[in-house]
Length: 159
Image (cartoon, rainbow, N blue to C red; front, side, top):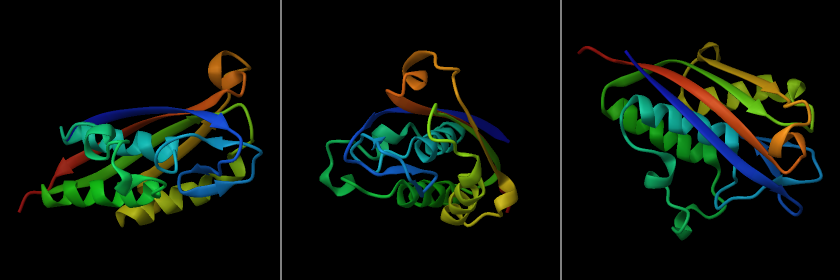
């Protein structure tokens, strides 16, 4: 078994959709980035890549590559999980936490878990997502941005 951790943060700006875990969340601002800037899915991707010792999201999907401009992070996640499967790894579980002062995310979490699980073709019971605020502290607390942490546990499939 192997464990990986992932972290991502993006600035909130006007004129962008807010996408978290592949779910569009109604909000007056969205996350700035080359892709859809989905901090939750990016953290999950980095956790998986770290567990398999495959680098990080920026190495696989560089922000100067026009192929990834505006792309859904769920497509990137599917690509990464396919790489892991080709190396005979399978997911045991992912545990992730989003840090966001606004909007309230609790009602969207089941949908996020379902979309993340579906992108990898795993049971939703393998995915846990939580949301927290920072009690108005730091860049998350002031509404300047959002962040996410994720931990992934994978195992090598014995054939």
